[in-house]
Length: 173
Image 1 (cartoon, rainbow, N blue to C red):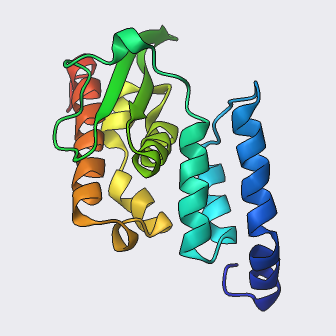
Image 2 (image 1 turned 135 degrees about the vertical axis):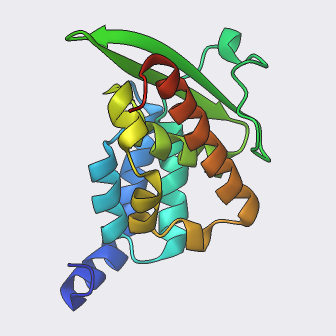
């Protein structure tokens, strides 16, 4: 219930400490990234886009580290203005192909966007990845309205890369 006045006062007064807490967690051993549902809920608490940008950067700090050996030309995501790498590992769970993603970027805000995309798709069956409407999720977060055209294109390129990886292991009906 974003529009309620008490929630706005809470969000405004607690956003900075909340983001600072995320920063301390990211620096520590606990690098567990939030789920996409947690990210959406957190965005609802943060009314100010300055706070949301800081939150996105903190999400990037919580990303699973990408091994230096994975920063290859083959893992580079084409279509991004910043350098973005994505490593995709295929796993089997209950007979279904499940994909695990590890990504990174040389830009802090982009690294946070990578974290959001990974939260949306990571460790899901390939067929679910292909069926997921990423644009609807980005709409809930109101990302498109607050990203440059280059970052929006890069976000689209990352999603397309993940979908292509999923389609390679799961035939689309």
